[in-house]
Image 1 (cartoon, rainbow, N blue to C red):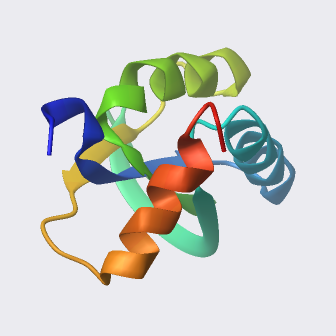
Image 2 (cartoon, rainbow, N blue to C red):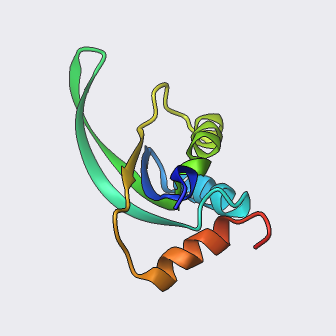
Length: 110
């Protein structure tokens, strides 16, 4: 498997359900992600010298490493945070039919 075809899980936090829905829809519509799962979370973090707690939504985005840069640019374009969380974890193994579905879902031909 080529490096750009490796499967990854991108994680993005957003402040509202509406923004989460918009980003999820856009990423899947643009074939930058096969699936975006959304979860309500509570985050505690330090920003501008203060410790804060916010209710957010976590997006778990299934895609390939080769699409990450384009996915990141789309998230930044749509996101409201000054510095959005956009991180990637490798998917080192998975159910082969599911992984094949990711490939088909983000394929330009699919």
